[in-house]
Image (cartoon, rainbow over all chains, first blue to last red; front, side, top):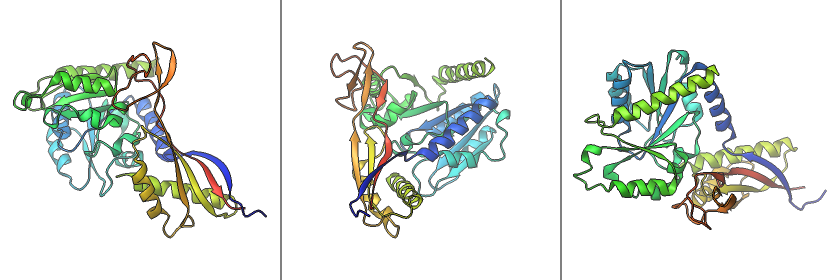
Length: 227
Length: 115
């Protein structure tokens, strides 16, 4: 028996378990005809404020619900409950991101067929969530005007892995001298062709356009299911 | 900092593989790490040592091969290695592209085992 170490090829994806579970979740979401949208951003970019507005506006039109991740508190769920949409909090403890298993557990007892749109708000963090597939159809990355236009260049991975960008707090754009063209250029540099929406959750400006886009996605998903 | 949970998964994966092969000792874990994986090499190396403590992998090495981001340029119809993560475009003709072919890897591709 040789004592020389030998190299054995194993080729295993480290996140295989998460990816398999996310694939299974995606299949369940598709079968139930629910469009799942995840939100990622740094802390304080306005994910919860956006969600509060979106749930309130969408609720009369379709069946909408949300899962919200937070490190320690249940404040977000309490805030979102005011929209009267079903909301569940996922408290992650010290974990800086959501993973597919947390989503699966949080969904226990919910009948997905009763939903049209499900939002998943990730923990405020522009690094860690990028590695974890949650089974979502669409990943929305939020950037608020108070954060600086170069955020996409500082966090290219999360912007590149997202599908749509959302610039929030547009009501403050003028006050903070937000350079919209520079923000656009930076988003396009790290994710060419990315669709960008601009909203103010406070005034509601831009919400119709975005929600229209999301509703169209849902219709497309339903057609694909029927087809 | 999610590198610790990733390191723990790697150690678990390697320990299972070693157990399956009759409890052989793991000397090193070879990992392919894409630049667009969202995982930081130094943080992972640091976490790996912590994750190995008290396991059968204690004292083993983590060998990381960094994989650059390779995109497809629709104008040149060719694969191109990205010059910078801040500019997703063809390194030859400059055409912007979002079509990532490689660079998201987070894969244990080999183990160094004794015997």
